[in-house]
Length: 120
Image: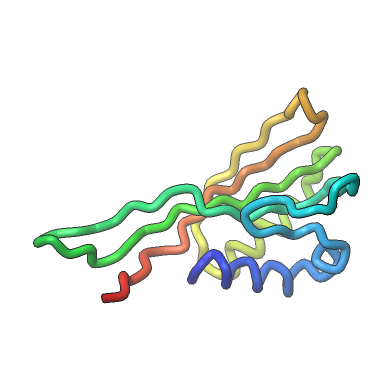
């Protein structure tokens, strides 16, 4: 699975957030002067880990993150995201912290979507 496929599935799984424009790929994209109120989700690619030998890259493991921003500690939404990942057999880690500078909770899910083959 690619991060783009995960994004599409997340849009389908969380239609109310998608309809409100609160699911983003890579960055929060808003017009100047517009404000997005939490909760919202941002999916990002954070790191690649290639496997190569004999001058050939055989596959890339791409590490991704799902960021959930919320004003209140939103345990039901966190559980819904975790269920979404579990149903798709996507392993994840979770780290939650309070961000003083923006007065929001940030929950980061580190997800490994598995290796992807490198096109020749």
